[in-house]
Length: 194
Image (cartoon, rainbow, N blue to C red; front, side, top):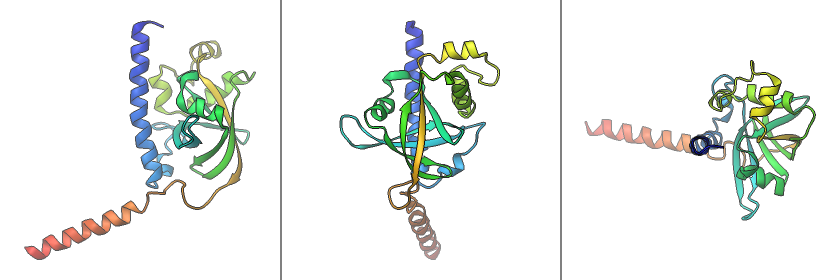
């Protein structure tokens, strides 16, 4: 890797960190299902996992594909990706998916014989992210895709049981009615003063 490549990779990492914070905020505010735009954002789910060192709850929004009932995603920055290292240490995860909230397990299947085909599906489901990484998953050859994604880690998520209750997507949705009430009150108060 050249210095320019590592600089570009670091810039991409920083840009994705900012975008990830936005995506998690949208999910927590109750707008996660609205982000379901395959061409723009891609298909996004959130993996809720435990930090390998701290044990604290962490969230990682990732693009995914559904193939034969399982969910597949990639750690695009390879083995050094924090959330990837966390789920290897503790594969019991919670998934926030546009179709629901699930308890599941995650496993690295990067050595699968279906790796390239599954990666292609995830890349197609990634919206702009694949294009930012310089990939057009619909036209690239299998050989080129395998070469360019060699450092990527491919993961399979198996959802076990549906979850409900507090702590899931929309846990901050209460902000909207409160904000609306406060703003409406301020508007009415301002009108009375005129």
